[in-house]
Image (cartoon, rainbow, N blue to C red; front, top):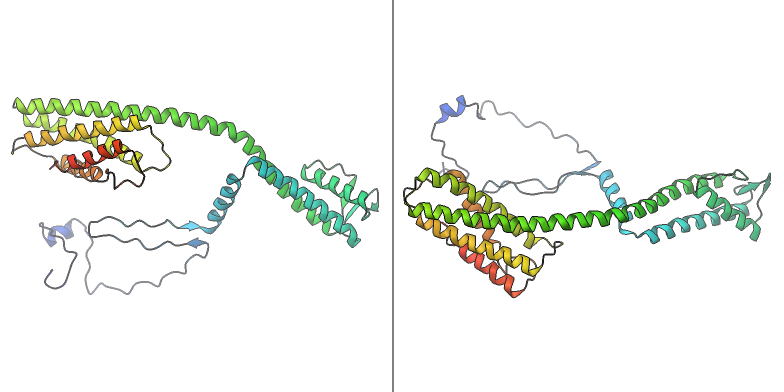
Length: 333
């Protein structure tokens, strides 16, 4: 098949008959039909780039399709979240003042202003004060009824009431969420510190388990017992290695140098013990498929931990342990 120009060829040893019996997809020239016409794309949906599959079988990453309305909602919420409580409050006051000015200008037009006690408000200073009074009453949804809008002023009053309620709701939400953000930050800090302690504890457990397996190897223990314990230890090891790798690549997580140095030193020690253990295993040691996959994943993760690989600058002591981890990982086979 490769001689005929095909590049993506897989060897299926069972043969075509077993392939068909297993209900795997097949294609015949006689059954080939023209593809159906493509449907009109939904204008409310933004389609991302097509996904591709590499030769290694890894699915390409592309942005999921996002509705334009949802994207607009997210941008508005982000805009409100970026503003402080004082800025939102000043925006609320500004909307009231602008609406009061609009009511007063409507009074200049004659029939599109405000009416109090059956008479239109004047365009003088007293009329401007009454317009501001009506604007504040409308924004707070009190509505005494002593002043009523007419003409275009009714549209302005409706728009002001909606905008003022939304903005004031955002101000109240900011006041309420401030304390909640402090509590969430404190909970996150405590949880994060506990997770760092758990990493160090698990790494010490991995080192202890690997040393026990190495002692079993020297004492010629049964291979199946060593294989089971080695699978479990390496699986735990790769989980903590992935977590440490994420710590180094996360820009928002701040870890003290001493804590991170202890974790990196434990990782380097565990990799060194694992490399010595793999070299000690007899040639007929049965490596399971999960163990092989986990060791490959562990090696790939360790290669991403080095002073030149991580996207942030670290102290020389941390860079030393990172480079030690990468060098030790090359001994694992």
